[in-house]
Length: 86
Image 1 (cartoon, rainbow, N blue to C red):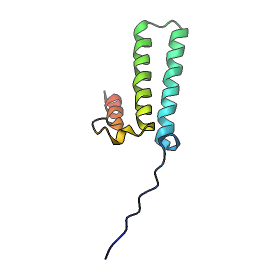
Image 2: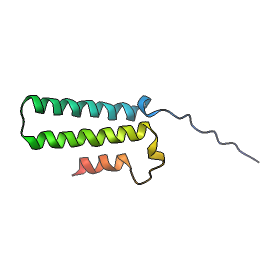
Image 3: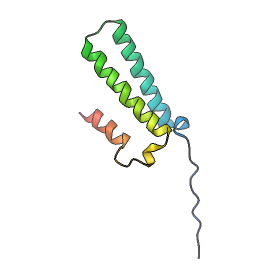
Image 4: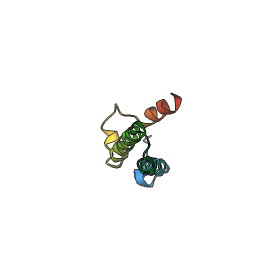
């Protein structure tokens, strides 16, 4: 007997819950960096926050363009879990 598997409907990254959380995280980090600049915080704070903005933006673009399906070595949840456990 032949069974047909239906593919689950693809949900774009921007409309998924994970997408909203990642974009909210990016907005919060950009806001933090802006406040650090306005408050004239020490340079390392601004640099580290800017680096986090760059990396987060890179991953959001990666997922929006669906390149995560082609690049197997990059795994966002692994990076997030390493960041919270250190």
